[in-house]
Image (cartoon, rainbow, N blue to C red; front, top):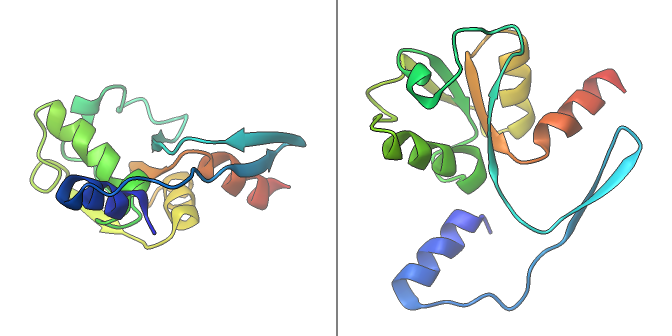
Length: 130
C-alpha cells in the first residue's frame, strides 16, 4: 500500500508499522539501499524559470496521482507550506498514474515540473539511456 494510506491509518486509528521495506536500486552500475521514502520536484536542467517553490505558479505540473504520497502529496504539502494552492496556482496539474511518464514528460517538455518518488529520475534515465 502507498505510504499516504498508511499515514492516514496511523492518524485515524493509531496503526503502527511492523517493519520497514528496504529497496535496492542500481543506478549507473552502483547499488543503493533505500530505507526511506521521499518525493522529488523535477525540473529540466535547461529550464531557468523554476528555481523556487514560488516559481511553480502558472506552470504545468505532471504528478503520479492525488493519492500518491511521494509522487504528489508530499510536493503538494511543500507548496501549501509555501503559501501556494496546488489546485489554483499551477496552470495545470496532470496525473499520469506512472512515475516514469512524469519524468519523460518533463524531459520532452509536456510539463514544466514533475513530482515523483525519490530514485525514479535516475532509474528512468537509465532505462532511456542505458
